[in-house]
Length: 185
Image (cartoon, rainbow, N blue to C red):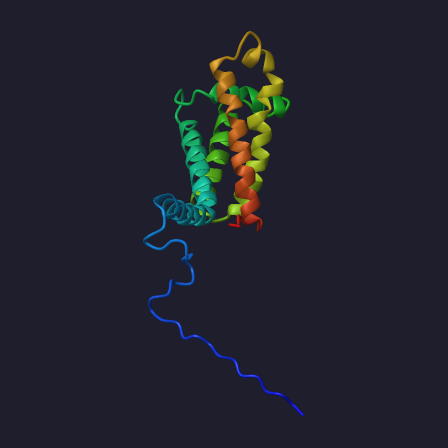
């Protein structure tokens, strides 16, 4: 013997609220609740936009910085960092690479990194070059710390110290290029 039960359903009408709209947000709801709902929707959309575009924007911005600083090194006297770059390369290579050669190699490396970051082509190669470049970019903080930070921070010290931001930004771009993803909760 089996018993059969009958289910009754109430048909939905066009007057009932849409599924994504809470019932409390009817026109009679207080202004504060409507505003809170609108802010939740706006911040959710902003978060979605940032998840999609923040890392690519960071990649291109870093690329522009490297391209610009690298291009300056091709013009004698145009780069304020040419002297420190030359001294750093000379010290790191134990004197094998110095002078104009050190500046030109640095310029080529930075322009290559910039182009790969901006275009996204050969990105992994550019990120490997960037990792190697950061040894040279950050080493003046150790090699020439007395000159950069000895009696207060010099302008060149500030110039070198800001490279920490480039390192952390590059770490985010590298993580993303290797498969990490931002996600919205």
